[in-house]
Image: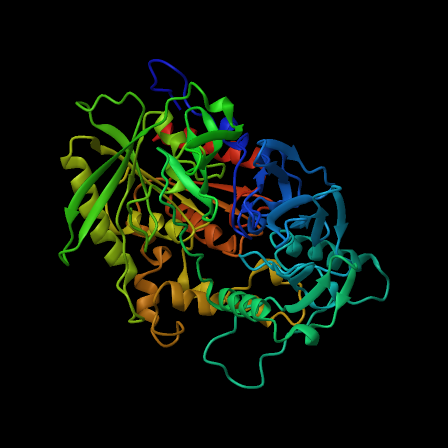
Length: 573
């Protein structure tokens, strides 16, 4: 890809995989002590330093470092631990700091005595991961946690690689004389309206940190903090409820509020800009602002793309926006080539999404496109509320045409040099748009679905070797829910056909780049079907496969290779 910058330097994929980050998927990275005299925070090392077990669903906790800060002196101290630490939580007295501790084999619960720095790992405790912090102080020295029954590994630990690991073990049985390799599945005795999705089993436990002993859960059933914690965790486990927004009267330009201690008037902000990533502590009482931590200084001197929002009113009379991410130093008198980043159901809001920012450490950092002279278009693609069946392909095509018209009419985008790119549901949308419109010079489908009928009946490759494996066929429920189908394919075949790009492949004239991992829960056969069809038709297609990778790439070398392929593809077309 040809760099368009006239001065400074552009962002590279090596910069991206070298980013430190602050993931909060399994609990906040930041915690004030109850008296406001101490702070703990976690920062994740770059993807380039990630161990093999740093799967997508761990969201960085397998490469996370823990720090403590004495707020009186602003002394920052790294916690020396063999494990990767995440989601810190102070005891009510402030003498103990609890944290998750990740290794290649386990997710444990750790505790440190802040006075002596002595660390303890809670024995026979395997934390269950569900998307929020799975432990809570319920009294002085009493720590409640959500654990996997029997001390087994949490399912999310190694989720993207467990299928391939179990496959190797199964194949090795071929070399054992007299041992069969058969595996039989039985359908459920009773007919179900939908195949149930896999759920993570969990139970609650209480540990006395001061006496270093486990406590009977029955002794604490009436503890109001435990009752609230159990209720909150179960609600999150079932519905994925989001954490409430933080509130503070203090603000900091370009800063994101990440922790608040109201009683002492302290607020912690994460500032991500051209100077790197900084943690800034603001004290309303003392009227001070102190930088306590800085990283990602390698971003200094990099020129980012710029955001431009185009406001409009949609067909329902609702205000919407098309968000453009323009190349650095873009001459706005000249329309730029552009890539539409597509994901049905998403719409640009007031807050800019992470993948528009220099500091996004994932494979989705779209600043990599602007560095090379491409504008990025983010369209408003809201879906009607409710459960009524939809023809999503036609709906998305209509909304995309409107967004493209607005972008082109602004004079900022060249209508003759448009490409479309999407991941997962967006990968499906990229393929679908190439069959329903003639707007694009090429498409890039990452982890996309090409055939809803075959997808409905497919098995999750990560669970293929499990027993019982019926939960591995939960794609049926996902397919009907995500694509708003009225039921299974045999009840509404035409709707499945209308919304499956594979059945309209003859109308696809633009070249297509297909990208997929063989351990993706969207089976790699979805990419194989589309590649096979385009090859049969003599159309231009390229299929890039990543062995051992899941729905999102986790290995730095693979992310670098992905962007090499994307750059070459766009330049070629």
